[in-house]
Image (cartoon, rainbow, N blue to C red; front, side, top):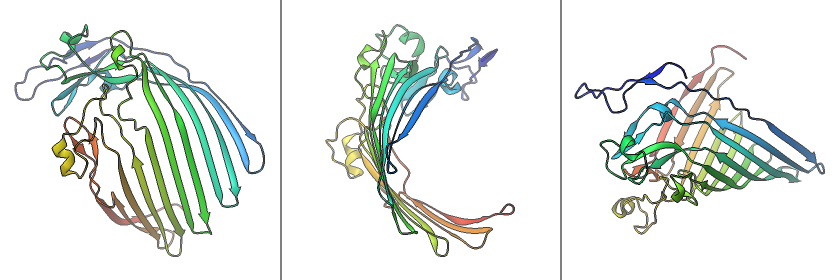
Length: 312
């Protein structure tokens, strides 16, 4: 980024905000992301594979320069952010014990250096007074590069074909994602779970594909407990939990939930298709954010037709 600037004005007063920066420092980074992988067919029905890889993610413009508020919490940008760097690996086995049945198991371990994350600012941090001007403790968050995080776990997938038309697939992922190095300023975050990464997540899908009748897919998704903040302490108020049908004594974090989605489509010739979809089939109330408590999408219904004007 070269010759940058960030100019913000408060609409009600016409005055510049405290995030108004007529000149931003130039930024440049160079990174590489090599990958080495291999697969070995043990038998016709069993194969194994392994991979070692590295990667990176550059901070976004929002993380670098744009501040925003949700409820009482204001997130400050950080123009000193550097890229995240990942080194990881995986080992897996794929088995086809029967003609129409396949199963796969994968173990993965990823180490991220300098991950960009939201850090709740406290008065004990050296740059608190500069970053959190006009904000009260607990309501000021800044994007920062932590020291290191580690994401490891297993993933399983199973698929079974019932004749030519029916298909059943299921998956499960165990994801242990924690901070392993908070740096000199955020040492208290070591051992905390990474925000918005559930430890347990699963899915089940039943599909029917028949061009003469219809294509139908019914999918179920389960998402386990996850935290919405770096300190793993934010919670949904008891009264809000009760209204949504949850136990009022539920601990910190976003409660587990499950949703079902339905998709149906039918082709009428090569150029016309009718479709119908329903997301969150049972109209389940589930939470996607704390402070303020925010629920996910309710039941959504969509339907229509697609017309292909060109192509085969």
